[in-house]
Length: 371
Image (tube, rainbow, N blue to C red; front, side, top):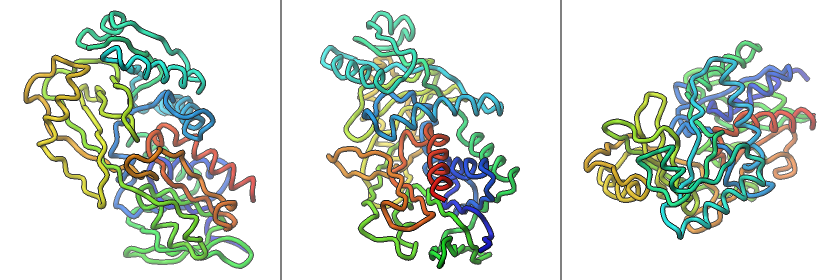
């Protein structure tokens, strides 16, 4: 049977585009569908644009594997394509003696995860690097950085299109039906509603992962993990950025916590916090500035009064609720849902952006080797 496309990817965020690129590299014709009017309008554009070293994630987890592999591949990709980035390094800071054990555990986990270049720092050594910092002790991760995530996604789109594929925006996924003998009939909504056939199907729509899976005929509802919205807001600093490096306190339950970055424009940004919400609400409550300031002054006592302004918010596609353990990325193939040629991605939150190239390669390898 002939198909309109070898592979269709639902979602043109960083992970969906990386999956499309990886499939294109294998000689497949690829269609990427995006419901919004532009690529990367969801989770991929509402984050910290941080390149994570891979410090925190449990031994043997997909997050640990894909973060380290993806980060190494990402720096090479950005460099070769002249996409803006800054490998500024990260300090994970214990602001008091009681936090030292927590950052030591992070150091041990990062070493197990094969993260390069880690160093223990005393408070004095940390302050020598960042004089405005309050630190009892710290860990230096030189491989961490920040980058232009939109420029990255445009480059991924370009590679898919250069290989003969198509990235179509304002084209919502309206469902798919497995075909007799293999492949899928994929329904595309929007003004140009139509149906296409595709041998393979990848779903990587971020916050819509559960809804998209439910629109695939024959996808067992029991195989769809429960989803939760984890909202985080950011505040921007008025005035000169105080630190060159990323500054991270020890993680909070379910997330890495409110941290500092100097963005590519040279401004200081703090966030995100974590609050579970029921809807996609991207408002930022200015009243949160006081709580942010209190938290920030633990590692930057010199934060001036009134220097924080509301910036933006993001929502993470979490697979755990409050007070539940944070699970791994979930890449669901035939062994999960019983459908040949389908890979459904769930819970691709941080470090999904850093991991995206590695996730794409894993998805493409699983689908093409299975085929």
